[in-house]
Length: 274
Image 1 (tube, rainbow, N blue to C red):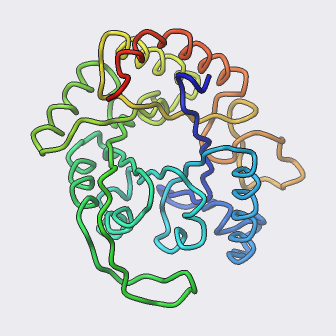
Image 2 (image 1 turned 90 degrees about the horizontal axis):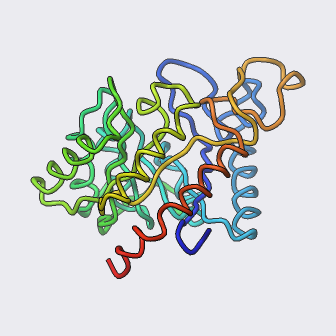
C-alpha cells in the first residue's frame, strides 16, 4: 500500500490523564507503582530500535519535555495532545522537535488553541531544559515550520466537510497554509472505538470530492479490539489488548487501510507535486 498510503506506527509511551491512572511505560514500566523510570527509558528505546530496524516509521505524543532527548531521534512524527496544546512548555518543546508536529484541538472542540500553538511553535524559542548528557542547560530552537492541526472532536465530532472547511478558513485567517489530520477516535467517534471506520470513510469521501488539506488520519488500533483495566494483576491481562483507550483490532485496521488504498488512487494522483 506504500504507493498511496504512508503508514506510521503509533508508539505512545506517555499517557496524559484527565484525573489519575497508569501514566505509561516510561513512567511505570512494571505497572506496579514502582515508577522505575530508568528501566522505562531503556525498555522504550530498545523497542524503538527494534521497530526502526524493521523499517517502520514511528509516531508518539510528546508529553514530558525531557523525553525527546532520550528518544526523539527515533521518531518521525509527534502529536501534542488536547490537554497540552495550550501549554507554553509544550509549544516551546514542539519548536525544537526535528519532525512534523500535529496539534490537537481543545477538548471543548475549539480550534484557536491548536492554531495558536502552530504559530508559536513555528518561532524560535529559548528555555531551560536538558542536553543529551542529561545536564540542565539553556536550549535555543530554530522553530518548527512543519505543524498542522489534528481534528479530534470535542463536545461534538468535527470531522465532517463543514468542520474541515471551518478549520481551513481559520488557518488561512491566521496566515497558515491549511494542513490537517483527522483523529478517528476520541470526540470524533463519541468515544466508541467501533465508529472509527465510519469516520475514516467520511475522510475518504472528502478527499475523493477534491479536498486537499487533509493529509492523514489517526487510528487507535491494536491486535485485539477493546481495552482492559491497567489495575488488574498482570497475570490476568489479555495479550494484545489495550490498557488505555479502546482500539479496533488488527483485522479491522487492515480492512480499513486496504479500502482507503483502493478508493483513493485517482484522488491522490491529482495531488502529485503538491
